[in-house]
Amino acid sequence: MTERIREFLKSRREDGPCLVVDLDVIKDNYTAFAKALPDTRVFYAVKANPAPEVLSLLAKLGSCFDTASVPEIEMSLAAGATPDRISYGNTIKKERDIARAFELGVRLFAVDCKAEVEKVARVAPGSKVFCRILFDCVGAEWPLSRKFGCEPAMAPDVLDHAKKLGLEAYGISFHVGSQQRNTNAWDRALASAAAVFKECGERGMNLSMVNLGGGFPTKYLKNVPTVKSYGNAIFKALRKHFGNRIPETIIEPGRGMVGNAGVIETEVVLVSKKSEEEDIRWVYLDIGKFGGLAETMDESIRYPIKTPRDGADTSPCVLAGPTCDSADVMYEKQPYALPVSLEIGDKLLIEGTGAYTATYSSVCFNGFSPLKTYHI
Ligand SMILES: *Cc1c(COP(=O)(O)O)cnc(C)c1O
Image 1: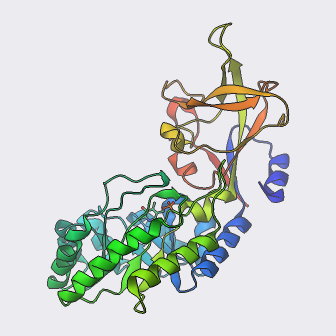
Image 2: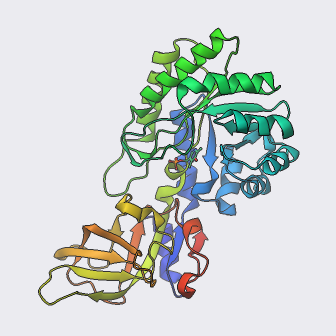
Image 3: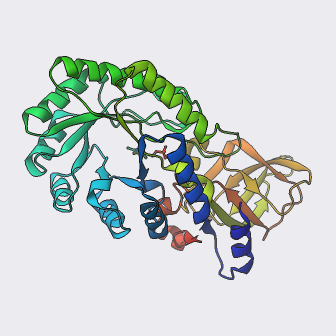
């Protein structure tokens, strides 16, 4: 929560929940990443918050962009990025979208299998490709599935195929899992990457780049290590596994770049109990899973919530959204302690919501508008 956001909310007159993002915080985050990893290029993961204000700020600061679709490429270009600062990092792309990206000037593509390599080779000739490898994501609060990446042992074949089809076998990528609170997670991933580099070298392919992915956390309820300590741990791991032949590196922070810059203001719609005997109260807000808080799925991300009655006695509450879908319950397995004095109409602040919120809000489920956003 920043003074600027507090002032903005004081003067806001519209009804309904909203996300307010302080661009100064994003600027500080970018600077912290650039400082912590001085030899690494930053590719902001656009999906975390694709607001034009965010993209143009980062473009101005010198950031590159990791995109997953043609519209994300177009938004990055519109924000002022040149195509050489854009990576098409999704391993699942339609061939015509790869063609469109190539037309727009993009020359860097992610792949994780031979079929995807063939698509890129057909419509983006001569481009650079990096192969994403699987990682088990231990230690991440929002782990990623096996959806993206191949077993490291398969990566040399994929890259070899790329080379044979006239592409540049450029490097390896991985993602250690989002909200990764363990700074050493990169160590094991870099060990795999180094093994792939070695195997490729033996086959006559000299890879140049390791894409270290995202995973840098935002502070929610628990403290998280500083960006600097991630930088130190990553540099140490690079030294350990690559010796004095450290490759070119890039990072793709999403959550860590924008998460702590945003606050959602929401209103308590109802406080109730399911029976007179039960202690648990149900607190219904005007935002829920379908209004932008999709990452409460499986209660993975637990946001800090501030109330105007903080300091008073608390009791456990189930927290739910306003829609008629019974899945629209955010915290129930592990209830959330809120002040006993909480009342209908109270305004709550949900902190750390600058990433993965606004774009997740549904179009108009139950007639509720998509989350209003302000970037100040
Ligand atoms: C989503 C994504 C990121 C960003 O991840 P964070 O955990 O938010 O930093 C980075 N790279 C790729 C390929 C992604 O899909």
